[in-house]
Length: 341
Image (cartoon, rainbow, N blue to C red; front, side, top):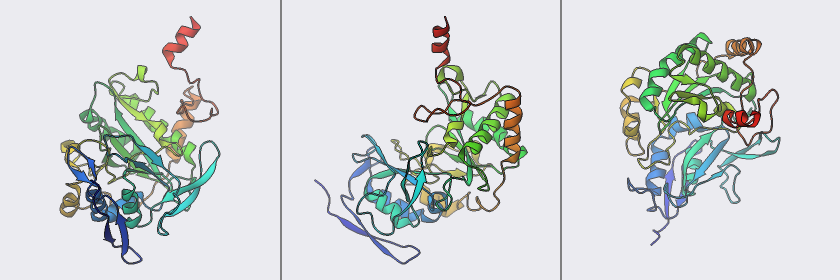
């Protein structure tokens, strides 16, 4: 039986908001017994760091009407009837189409999203006042079959060194799943394609230094038992779970910023919707100063141009993207060889 609707009082920059929550006892994470109300109260508890990481930028909402064991879908555009404290900005997608996209500017908007069974928040790397030029360079260290979180941890410090040589300050968080996300604050001087090239340059340099542990090969059949530097996550309208966003996994894990000093001892399964408020109370937000000293990607772009001159050009784009200049054929290598034979 559906539970009665309740109203939560949500503090914010313009005073308290009264946000309605229908079916607050609906269980979103069955293994943990975590309900929609628990999720809403979690978002209120982590409001400050959550907004710092996910607010004031386009965001896609991944919604699970039947809980994390059910099907999901993405909401990008503000639905009809959205409250006036839910903002939007017009963005340009890779197809060239322009359309309004949701923007969260206060935690009441995130609670409203939880009312719609949003579990995962996917923020863009750019801000609402300049959606075309990212303020973050993002690298996804993605464990491949035969590798795990510990393998990603083993290569992350070397990536930090590469990025430092490129003039960037690297910050790290758990993905909430098996991998790690490395983010660098950058000045919004370059559009998404340039930032993608900077990520490829950094990934190639890391793979040169750790060829048995790291790959930038797009095709899964070529990656082997290595950590994949997922450069395509740097594309326009390609997003990762934001910092402090829950994940739609049985343990109700949260994508969690950590310090480089604690990384080696991190257990990502311990960071959950239930435990995160206590962690913040005890250790604070490791990303509290994240945006204070943005860097520039000029050096990484010089590495990109050097690699292009050496014959290492563009890499494949995701299949839903239009064909891009200089892109190699979107045919997996084994199939291409059979065609040639």
